[in-house]
Image 1 (cartoon, rainbow, N blue to C red):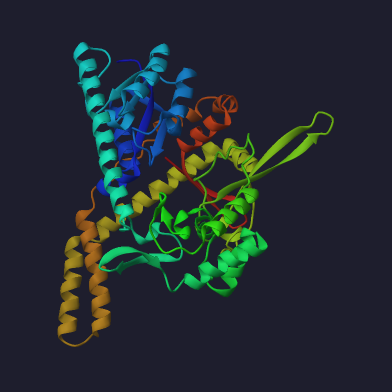
Image 2: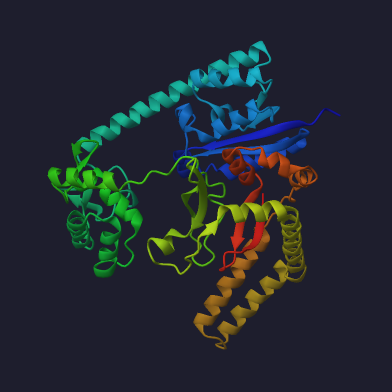
Amino acid sequence: MNKIERCAIYIRVSTAEQMMHGKSLEAQKEFLKNYAREHNMTVVGVYADEGKTARKELKKRKAIHNLLEDVKADKIDVIIFWRLDRWFRNLSDFYKVQDILDEHNVHWISTSEPGINMETRDGRLQLNVVLSIGQNEVDTTSERIRFVNEALIQQGKLIFGDTNMGYGYKSGYVDGVKRMIKDPDREDAVNAFYEHFLKHQSRQAALRYIQDNYDPDFSFASVRTLLSSEFYKGTYRGFPYCPAYLTDEQWNRIQEISKKNVKKAPSGRVYIFTGLMRCPICGNALCGTGCSSIINRRTGEKRTYCYYRCNKAIIDHKCSYRHRLSQNLVEEYLLNNLENEYYKYKIRCEKIEEKKINKKKTVTPEKLQKELNRLNVLFQKGRIEWNYYNEEYNRIETELNELLSTSPEPEHDYTYLEELLRTDFKTMYFNLTLENRRAFWRSTIKQIHLNEDSTIKSVDFL
């Protein structure tokens, strides 16, 4: 048997691909995990770039940087990805990364393209051809789209949907052409917002004023758009494009005020559980917040504290969960209870699977079909009303279709986690950088569920 290789999974999907073709990170990850399992590899990390194109500047693809840090730390033997275009679509960045991989004896596998590799002459030739074609396709497509869009923008024609226009605008026809127009239902609120902000120079005060007097659903996201989008001065990419709410002088004044209010996140603050926790009341993703305090007045040494909160509660005042959850406490709990939480999760999964099996035994397509026939007879005889008949028929038909279309789910593979728990993972963990601690939890945990008192209710694992 071949030696087990430590495998890193790299997955990527651009926003456009996700929208147009339904390509998902989850599908890539599942495919590559199965590949690793079948080829005697143990997965040591999953590195995902979502909403990034392979032509994007290397410095903007954070998952690649995290992956290379682990390569330099000699934690990886092989990198696997679905196709070469998931990895790179330009030659220069590819070879920059390849130099680092060669230095640490790490190879890669394009799992759906076995002919492309760095080990053979034909493989290298095919690699360079594919990269060159991919780079040319992306550049040509980008130029064509940019040219077409700029022409449409100069004509004032609409090139995107209502959700991208910003608060106070909507689509409409002007002289037979679809354009951006002011939304009459929100126009007064936008004008009032700018008047209040220019007078009081406070985002929070303007937010509260609009919520109290115009629109209770007005959010801080709308505030950010109103203060940053050039639509509101009537332009897009520098061209006249839509009706303006502000003069150039007012816009410039607002930018000056906004710059004074911008708060940059202090360095050294890394939120390692971002995206893994949701508000137990409204379900909104918890956001990182923090502070620093001096712990040694003589030396000026500071300690950084990271917390998680529900912005829907703290900023928009639309949720009652006002706790600040300490990152240190969450981290400490998980390190001390990871094994216990894993076994509880495994038991939950087994119970769910058992219920599904029992349901399949008791509820069969034949029984559901008989129930539909019985409903038809009762309705035809006038023994039940239409509303009841329609509701029940739709419910049973949906259940029948689900039963007929349900395919057996793949068994959960807990090999990686069980091997991890048998090691001294805590010692390894405390030697990681904060960024790599975040990567560790993201490659291990799917979600952390909270109680309303901020204690951890349960943990779901990948």
